Length: 103
Image 1: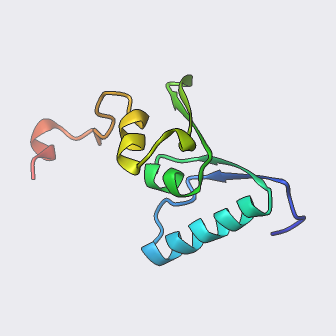
Image 2 (image 1 turned 90 degrees about the vertical axis):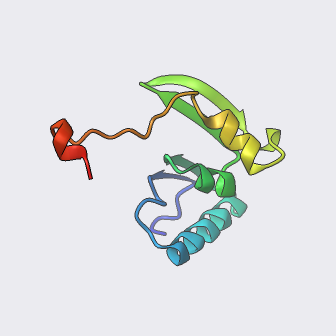
């Protein structure tokens, strides 16, 4: 990595990569952590967070809604339950008329 930074910012690093590259990414990020680097990551990928993070901060509409340490959770299921905001956030509307949305 150029200039050997102590703080590294990543924006959606696990987005649109294959499983092998994802595994390499997780290994690399964990190596950076072992080297005592600080990583600030923006992601929607809870599984990635579970594999690399110490602390999770969840924002919703620019407001802080949760601030959690991963050590608080015994397993991934408990973590994902605590990480959700209690409402479906997966709906995507592409601006198609109702009949155009039907498959």
